[in-house]
Length: 490
Image 1 (cartoon, one colour):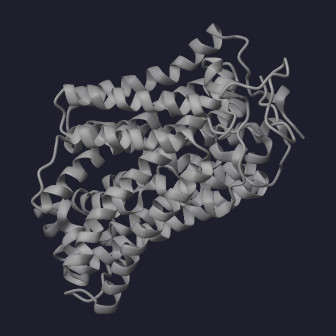
Image 2 (cartoon, rainbow, N blue to C red):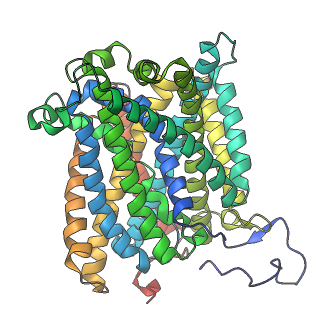
Image 3 (cartoon, rainbow, N blue to C red):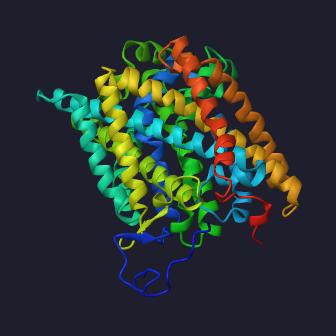
C-alpha cells in the first residue's frame, strides 16, 4: 500500500467521518531542513564517543600514528557510495533508505532481506550504545565518590526517556539532538584548538603524511574501526517523509553529514596523536585506552574540562541511542505501510504525526534486549557493547555494498540517468572499496566479538540468515507492496 498524503487542513478523520483515535493516520509530517537532518545523523555517529572510545583502540590495534588516515580513506570510500546513493534518491520516493534502494535495483526478495538486515543492524548498534551508556553513567557517579545502582538500571531509564522523545513529533528529537551535539562537538573542537596552539611533546604529528607509518602495524584493522565510526550517516533518506523539499534536502544533508563527520574525525584523531607524540601514542593507548582522551583533555584544558567531557560522553551516547531509535521507528513504520510487517506499525499519531506505535515497539524491544543481557550477566562494555557493535559494523557495510550494487543495476537497466560518474564510476569504486572492507570485517569478526571464534561464526550465521529471510517473507507475504520498476515514478 502506498503512503497517502495527509489531509490538507484540519485533523484527520476516519472513513465514517468520526473523530480519529490517538493513532490513525498513515503518513509522517515535518519540515526538517538540511541542518536538522544533519544533526540527526551526525548524532547517530556519536562523534565524542568515537573520539574518546574508538580512536585510542584504533591507534593501539591499527596503524598507530597513521591511524587518522584511516578516517580519510573511509570517508573517500563512503563518498563514492554517497554519489550513487544520492543519484538514485529522486527515483526512490519512498522513505526507507537501504531496503527501498535494494528493492528497486535488485528485486523484492533481496530488498526485503536488506530490510531485515537493516533492522538487525540498527537494533544491535542501539543495544551496544545502551549498554555503554548505563556503565558510563555509573562510572561518572563513581568518579565523584557516589554510589550507583547496576548499569542496567540506568540503561532502562535511558530507554524510557528515549521512548518518550521518540513517541512525539520528530522536531522535538531534532532539537534535543541539536543541543547535545553542539555541546559534544564543542568540547572536542576546543581540545583540538588547544593542542594545535600548544603543540605536543614531539611537535606536530607527521605520521598521517608518511606512507610507511600509515601502512605500519595493521592498517586493515585501523580501517575497520574507522569506518565503524561513520555508522548512521546514511540514514538521511529515512527522514524523507519529514524533510522539507526532500529531493534537495536529502542529497545536501548526505554530503554535508559525511564531510562534517570525516573532517571532524580526521582532525580530532590527529590532534590526539599530536598530544602524545608519534613515538609514544601507541604506548599510552596500550596503558589504558578508555582514559586516554580524558587525560588529554585534563592536560591541555584542565580538570574542569575533563569533568565536562565525562558528562558529555554520557549525553553523546544518549543522543546516539535516540538517533538510532528514530531510524528504527521509521523502518518499522515504512515496513508496516508496505505490508511487510503488521499494518499497525504503519500508523502515525494523529497529534504528533510520529510513528508512535513503531516507536513503542522499539522501546519494548530495546528494554527486552537489555534485560536479557543483564540476566545473562554480560559486561556492558566488554561484552554488550563489543559484541553487538561487531554485528552492526558487518551488517551496515553489507547493506551499503548491496545498495551500491542496486545503484549500478538500476541505472544500467532503466537508463533514467546516464551520467557516467554518478551512475557507474563512483558507485563502482564504492562497491570495490566496501567489498574490501567487508572482507576485512568478516576475517576479523571473531575479534569484534570478543576474540571468540564461536561467537564470530554465530554472528556471521545470524547476519546471513537475516538477509536470507527476505526470500521467505517475499513468498509468505506475496501481497506486500514491492518496490519494482512498476512503481517507478517520473
